[in-house]
Image 1 (cartoon, helix red, strand yellow):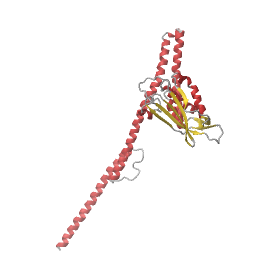
Image 2 (tube, one colour):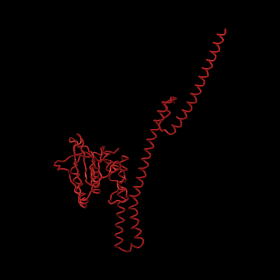
Image 3 (cartoon, helix red, strand yellow):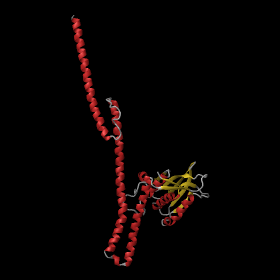
Image 4 (cartoon, one colour):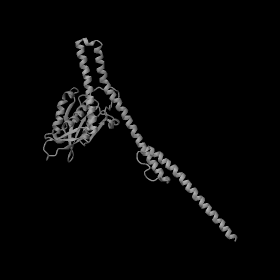
Length: 327
């Protein structure tokens, strides 16, 4: 009898213990679930994707992994935003500098004329000519900005055709001969190209690319230096055009940013040479609009090499022009 009573008491305590354990477990899980659900909800306010699209897990390992992934993704986003903000500040500072210099120049000459110099014919003509140069520079910058905008949004037609890249480069040499001559810089090929090399692209835009790169090599080239152009077969249907100079060059830190709009290696704020500050950015956009690549290698006080690829002309296609939208 005593044994039965003892067994009943034991069973009672076991039932009570199990019931209490289950109730406590359920309450704890609900409490933890609510807390974790609150974390999911709070995180989802910051997450553009559906962080809570799946089931809410109370497994701490899985939760930790998800939170760590979220934190890593957010860090990348924050770093990207910081880089963009720095780029925005640099861009606004640079464009402000590029625009205000010719604007202040024009304003200065006009105010001088209005203050009395207008009556002197010789001074009037000289100041108006200088003001016109400032206006021309403003128009030059705005035209280049307009071209870059069209290239970026795909609102520019490429008139592709087969043309001789050797002839095009020689034309650029002839056009820039006087400019190069002022610094006694020699414009030359790396060898004699006796036969034409036909490529497929927008002739006018590629001429602008070659011209901008050679002007850049002259601008930062040493007096009595050399700018050399070479054309090599890259793969079966590609050629690579290299423009190499023995000028100032630049340190490694500047190379990744050299194609940014208005980016200057010289941070002094002065600009010894002319130009809109958009030449290299235009070059990059034109080459990428062709679906090609551009590369740069540079060593400070040794020189720079800019190179870009172009598609070879198909010998089975007759010379002609193909108009296409840059997307």
